[in-house]
Image (tube, rainbow, N blue to C red; front, side):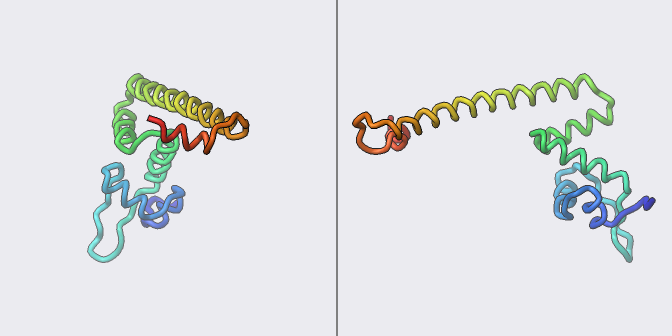
Length: 132
């Protein structure tokens, strides 16, 4: 197995594009190897796992700043702190789900009002959005 990769091969192996790798480097999530006088930077193959970790954490709703914290916690073997951070993220997701459910119910109610001929002139949705 190849122990070092070009940035293009690292990106391909991790399922991202090269600009994602560069962006993660600018954000301090990945280190940038020294560039040889003649040639291109070589990245350790195991960095692929870190890039995949970052992408999976993003899918779960973690910000890059939070992911940076998770990476520090992982290096410190701090499972309790990681669990606490995940718990806070779960509370945020639950809150957003509750908000989305309420928004869905309100919009569905307005849509039902559009179908009922109760003498309201104009669109009930527009009236509700324009109300003070």
